[in-house]
Length: 63
Image (cartoon, rainbow, N blue to C red; front, side, top):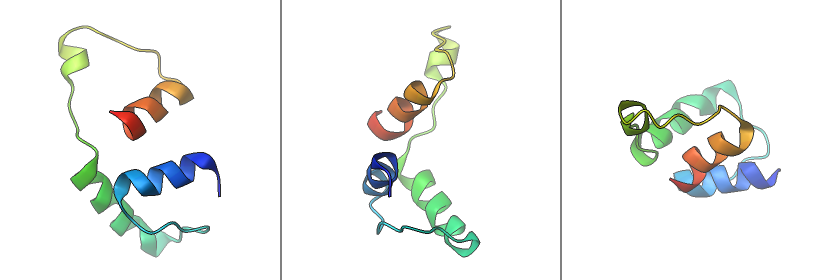
C-alpha cells in the first residue's frame, strides 16, 4: 500500500485495504462525500492552481 493510499483511508476514517474492489467503491465515495468538502471558492476568486498530482493530493488530503 502506498503512502497516498494510507493517507487517503485515514482522511476518510475508513479501514485500509490493500485491494479495493468495485463493491467497495460506494462506501469510499460515500466517505468522500461526508469527509472531503466540495467547494469552488478558488474558482470564484479566480485563484486557479495547475492540475497536478501534488495539488490534488493537497486538496484532497490536507484541505
